[in-house]
Picture 1 (cartoon, one colour):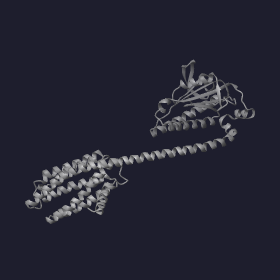
Picture 2 (tube, helix red, strand yellow):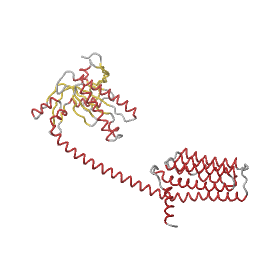
Picture 3 (spheres, rainbow, N blue to C red):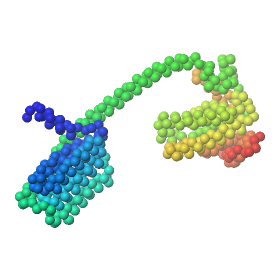
Picture 4 (cartoon, rainbow, N blue to C red):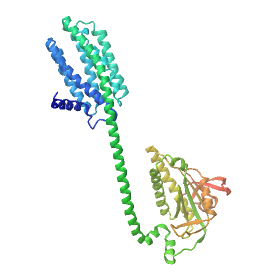
Length: 451
């Protein structure tokens, strides 16, 4: 055999043995096996067309042409990744074709033996629908039974001589068994070849991922360098940023004097918020989603307390602390803080409803408020922050931890200042950790009359 002939044969083989890009890895084995099977099928039908033409069974000769067209269509669907459509066309053609062959030339010619051969094909599709697989299997089985029970004993339309009948029967049996042997041999080759393809594709994917990681590292290093340059420039904006860190009055004092003095406040109202079951819920979220969720909520809290004229002190994890009545003292601090707490509660209820609609994890908030004296000032020399101290802060924290999700829990001292502005429900004396029994109230709603 010349080199030219070998190259042509190899080219033809590769055409049917090479998988297009649209074929998924999981379907490689099935694609290769079905593609060669359908090619052999239309070639076989071409051969039968000439045989039937010579036997003067012209309807069967014309039927071969229809079958050849069907297999060419099936091969095209298969190469485009529509494996179920391709296999459906092939199997319907086989069952119908063999049924007509038995009807035209009789059971004794053995065309029905091809039907069981293809019954296993649907189960070779890894991602095929299980109902479709069994439907195709039952189609083959039903077709074979129909031929056996109803067509077998019918006199064929064309009465062939005994010799052609014997030749057809023998050749069909041999071809049927040959198909079984061929599928087994080729399936082994296809498995080996597809495994190599899968390994190569996997290596390509791994290499692509490694390149992406390297690119990401380079980008992070570049961003870090740019960030360092920005930090150098941002140091010049110290005075401007200071106003965003501290209350305006405290920032002015620090700017003018280089330091601030701690100050006593006889009466302020402190609010603590906390998310119920935060630790449990946070374990179900990615770090990015968790930070995004907290940022969304705390940003809304910032806007609310700003509108209510109170001061944010700090956040610790999922806890948010704010105070009314400082650094500038006023007489409405208790009412302002309770108003802010109600607005925060409303925001969280609406946020909760939205999260439920989206099928996502929800946060429920507890809010505690207490009124009393504190000391306020700046601590530290690096990353300094404005903070407050005193038993009032501790008791406000106990109001939060002793409350309930979705409710605003206030102490008796706060209640005395807001009882004419809000409807409150007395809870009785509640045991607070390290504080003994404390009068507590749930704020229900704001009254129409404000004093």
